[in-house]
Image 1: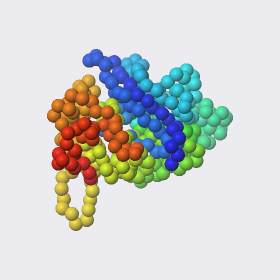
Image 2: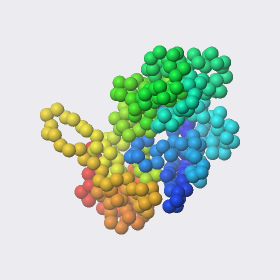
Image 3: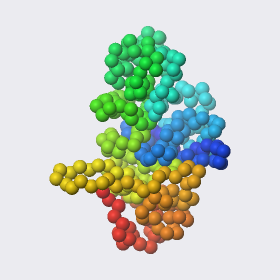
Image 4: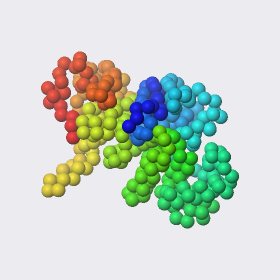
Length: 343
């Protein structure tokens, strides 16, 4: 895989003004998306995954939200500095996004065909007939029957899963160089889910250097489709590495907990309860001051993990983790502490 960066995100901070103060939903996030790559982003709800994606698209509602720091570069061009007109040309053409909530993303007073053709005509500079034909082809590709007829229907005439397929068709219609897919298959059954993922990957390969950011809770999907994976918690990246590195050798206790919550059926083995990470994701206004995971971590070191924010450090080539357990200054190694972080 080429290591040329398509997207570079550096020290991104996105916050929201609330009645209780400033909420930093994304706090110092940095990562690259390489050309021809599928990058997965995982983590519980409230970890900052979707806000990161919306920040890249510059779709943070202002007020109350605002990108207060950082850099977002697409092929070396700083998009945070672009005028809104240039950003509109970029969205849907160079960067496409499949939103998590299709009902709030589709306009209820316009037909599906009208909403689909609008983006195609804008970015591909074709006439209305050609745009409608392209729209029907995309609906057919995502498994919607009688696509020509359904173009005349309104969003309320589609089920939740069908609306999600429409959103996927719209995002893919201009074959963007970077596709951000935020829980793209949540409302779909397993068979359609596999077809949609295969469609996304096949369209990615048709455009030279195209990449995908896949935000999901489904670790099995990440294992099957992604090249690298980012684990987020508390608005920060806690671990990042190749799928093999993270799944075979999870370093962060949070990553370890996520992987242990997946069923691993083995024929002939005894039944046992799945392990769960204790507690809940803390309120964004009440995040711990040091390690964001210290209130739920079974391996937290007294003092250190509650007083000092760990840095994101490279433990092996391409494999980074934000955890005091792997710092050289820590008196004991994880092995000496009796900690086994492997699945």
